[in-house]
Amino acid sequence: MNFAFIKISVGELGPGATSLLRAIGMMIVLLAASIFTKKNLEYPEGKMKDYLWAGFLANGLYMVLFLEGMLRASAIQGAIVISTAPIWVGGVAILTKHELFTWRLLIGGLIACTGAACVTIGGGGDTEGSRIGGALVFVSAIVWAWSVIKMREIVEGRPALEVFTLAFPAGFIALVPYGIVSAFQLDYAAVSWEAWGSLLYMVFFAGSMAFALYYVGLSQVGPSKTAMTQFFIPPVAALGAWIVLAKTPTTLQVIGV
Image (tube, rainbow, N blue to C red; front, side, top):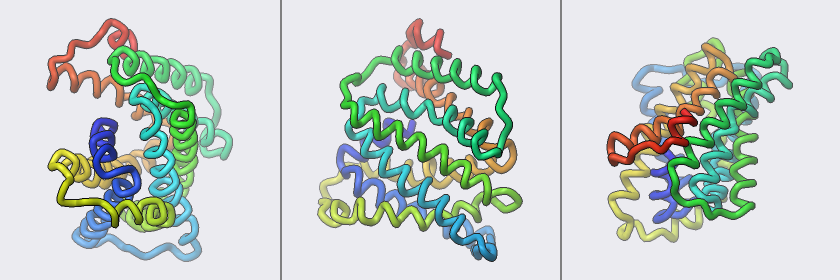
């Protein structure tokens, strides 16, 4: 659902303001949740740089590249390119010796990526996007893979909410210069309730809750298996369109699943 809500929010607020307002909202939610659950918000000795580097990659650089890419890429183009992220996560995990290479991982990832592409293409929609847009989304997928590995190094043995809250502020290093001007120039009174609702969804569900749960999985089953859950996004989106919008799945989508 995040792709649809990003399109709505970015369409009215712009990518810069969307990313900065989302980050501010997430920071408030994460701090409130951490304080309410009495989490320890102190950096381990000698580990502060590791936390901030992981946060900069996952919550700053990745988001800027992804939003700028989705602004220029078509919905189909962006969804297909970003669905390659689990393969890159597996590759980086192997190169950094976090996991061992297996042919099953590679072949399974390629099959799943092909299926995700079939589901996305079969759903139809906007297909006209620029090459630079696709390239930016592709780079964002690589950055995301890198951030997952760095986050794995600090999340083990500590509650995911603590780690996420401590790492998150570094994202503002990229997001403040990226979004501060558009955030100040925005006519907030003219923003529709759909755009505000989309932003709230991105703050609470696709942001704070989803990332915290993702890092729980990361600490328990490792980067490759956790990243593989991303392949569920196109089938779930197609299923949602069928249930909510009565949009019958196409043959290509069924094959893709």
